[in-house]
Amino acid sequence: MNDDGTNQVRLTDNLVVDNHPTWSPDGKKIAFVSQKQNGSFAIFLMNADGTDRTEITTLNGSTASLSWSPDGGKIAFDDASVVSASIDIFVVNLDGSGRQNLTADHTHLDLTPVWSPDGSKILFSRYDVYPPVGYGGTMLHTINVDGTNLTPLANGFADGWNEDSANWSPAVNKIVYIVNVWDFGQSIYIANADGTNRQIFEGCTHPLNCGGIPDKGSPVWSPDGNKIIFHSFLNNSSILGDIEIYAKNVDGGGLIQLTNTTGNNFNPSWQPLTAKSRKRIRFF
Image 1 (cartoon, one colour):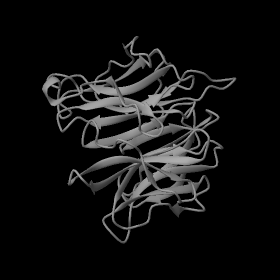
Image 2 (cartoon, rainbow, N blue to C red; image 1 turned 90 degrees about the horizontal axis):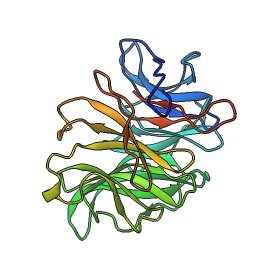
Image 3 (cartoon, rainbow, N blue to C red; image 1 turned 135 degrees about the vertical axis):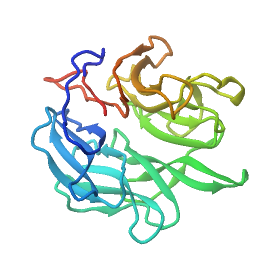
Image 4 (tube, rainbow, N blue to C red; image 1 turned 120 degrees about the vertical axis):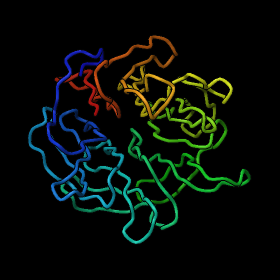
């Protein structure tokens, strides 16, 4: 769809699950997760108009979160381990070769990777039991693209016990992400790229003010850095009701609803700005 919600075009039409779309850096192709005829899942590639669907790599699990490398040559994703109960961060070439596990410790759940716009790091969420709080949750980490220099971001668990679905700003100096505000509301926060200066963007900040505020998810920066798109439930429960796509200015104003359809619209991906194609959003 256009970035104002108009011209919604269906790209896939089948009886299986298609999810987690993400634009290529040149805005010409889309990678996504889809179910195969045998019931397993895989990462697929297609043209921006939905044609020329090809498989990249089979997944061990049923879902994965995808992110293109800035040079367009690789895709980062999370997938279940075949030898343990862990979930790891992988990278793979577009032709399916060179699949590499970056976090193969067979211990943690490593989720929702996203490549930094400068190509140097991958940001992701890691589930663990973190001292001194002594309970489990996801905390944001970065890792170099060769698997070295695993680093937790500063001030983890400052605003809630889960930090997920992070996305870099185009300038690489900021991140946007989801916080589970102590199990009472999924809210969107913005912080510096190192985890400092965390600020609420959309949602609630404390269990006492989360009542009636719908859960948010999948925040994504616009290519010009001025807006963030995300999905939101239309009531205060992530179990009930439909889900729609919204956009909001980074400065906090200009909230608009982009979709208003029967069913659920979620996991948006903003098309990179190119000479021939501008301001398109893909979602499932």
